[in-house]
Length: 488
Image (cartoon, rainbow, N blue to C red; front, top):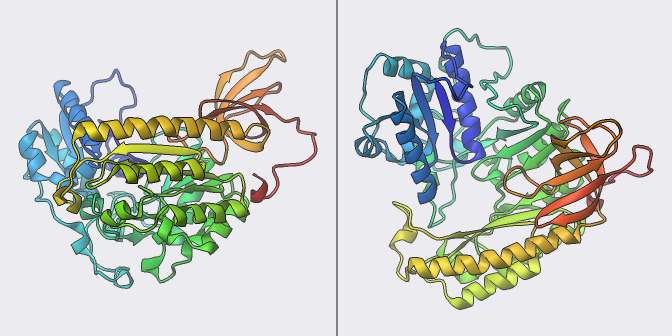
């Protein structure tokens, strides 16, 4: 069979849980693209229209190959029977089918069909109060492994300690580690909480065990993912749990760098900033979900903040770590957005000096409050604003990268770009602490001695090409290391 993963790093973790369950059930995952599989399982994305269309295209392509096709993941969970009716080429799974995924695919191979689930608001599966969630009955939560011994795949015995139910599907030195699932926020434009459910943290001991397992399977950087990492621990009775988890993860043998993603600005506490900027091994990297800078637009989004509050947060971070990486995404064209709101966002971007900026045009999502708001903008108007802001963002990111020339960083080596040997100049690809995988820029390292994938190379930035950096390897014997996070 073949397992196809679409969407975000959270989906990658979910797919690796599915892979482990399938392997335990006797299924062989085909790595060879030339080998025709009997079954194709597509872990779909249901976030925005473009992602949903990509999922549909992938399902149709798989069906054209003659394989039996199964849809799982966010889009499948979100639409259930509606997707099955619109796309009869595929059978549709719910998250609750994951615990018996092997049995489901056995049935598919035998030619059986089943009725797809009716979509439900998964937030209603758990108590409203986070304190009441631990131990509560709930359907399967993807990426969290087995909640009970009965959930373990056939032939897998329970261990005395935390059980890692995961199979790595890639060989890179970076691996996502899911610390929580779901979201309790009610952003008016977002449908994710309805199909991902209420916020549930994973226990710290489970995460430490999985981090050690990932390090043993080649991971050198852990990317902590969730729908909202700043809420980690609130359902376990400790709002500061992330602050104590990060040093523990950074101390796991074999782990060189821990990076946190998906931070809500309104929930970023001074203690968390301190831990993220001073703990060895924790990247001083802040993936802040600003979404806009106009207070009026943000209130319509049911979010908090404005330009001045966000700039104050950035100043607080850079006071402790002047070279910290900061990125964010922004939605333009939200219902009721005026040119004055766009101007305010431009002002914020110019003053914030972010390392990475994503600009997205607003689009209605089924079942969200924003889809019912007045003041909807036309698609041409939205596209024009996206083009305007994206052009500014490119200029600002290029300038921010150029400002880093002369800085000393540690680059995690991920690929050999050119190694002619015989003492000639070698080139390697990697990322500094302020460059997250896939979404941010990268660094080309120029070296006169060999490096290996997974090395942390100490470099001095010598140039920039757009958002990407060029850096020279510093001689091993040159005095001084990057120093504390405040000097990174």
